[in-house]
Length: 284
Figure 1: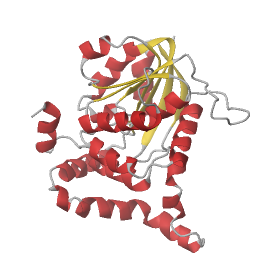
Figure 2: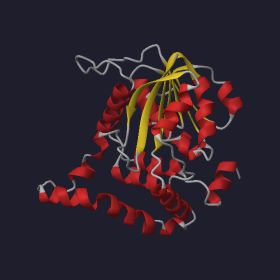
Figure 3: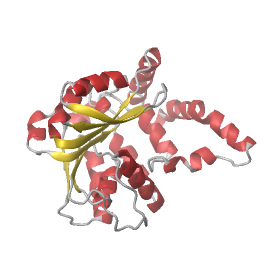
Figure 4: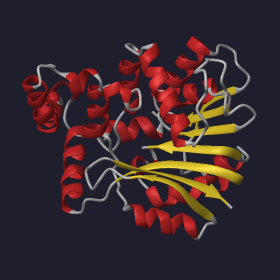
C-alpha cells in the first residue's frame, strides 16, 4: 500500500480524486467554457474580440498545474494554447486528469500528466521553469502548507506568473472546520452524508429560500458552475472532506512571496468568509 493510500485508510487524507471522478461523469461543455474564461480573466489575458475557439492567448507559454485535481484547469490552459504539465499527489486525481486529456487532447505531446508531490523538492527540481505556475486550492491540503508554498516558487520562470488560492484564516471558525473535516475522514464512507448534508443545508438554505421567493427555484444551485465550472455538490464535498487543512491571511501570503522576489498582480478575497483568497504574483 502506498503512502497516499495509508493516509486515506488512517483518516488523515481525503480522496479528492474519487470526488472529481464523480464530477467528470457529468461534466459539460458549458462548464469547461466557464472554467476557461475564469482562467483567462485570472491571468489577465486579453479577451477575444470574436470569442472564437481558435483564440489562444497562452500560445507559446508553459503552464504547470500543481495539484491538477479533476484536470479541468489543465484542460482550460491547454485550450488557451499553453503547453501543460499536470501533476497530483492523489493517484485518482491523476487518473481524472488523464481522462480529460484522453477525451479532448488524445496523445497530445504538449500535455504531460503524472503523479508527483509539492512536498518533493527533488521531483520539483526536475521539472524546470514555467511561465505560469497554477495551484488553486491545493497547497493548504498538503499537510505542510508553508513548505509547499515555498517549494513551488522556484518553478516560476523570470517574468512568469504564480497563481494560488488558499483558504482564508477565520481564526476560531477555521479551527472548528478543521475538526469537522477530521471527523468526516474518520467516519465510515456510508455514514459521511450525516456530516455533508447538514453542511449543505447550513450553506445553502438562505440562497435557496431567496430563490423560491424570487420565483426562480434553485437558481443558485443550477448556476453555480458559472463561477469556475464546478458544481455546488462536488465543491461542497471537497470542502467538507478537504483534509489536511491549513489557512492563511492574504497579508501573510503577500509577505511570504514578496521576500522571494514576487510582486502581487491580482488579489480576489473571499470577503472574510470560509472560502479561498486568490492571488496572482509576477516574478521579478
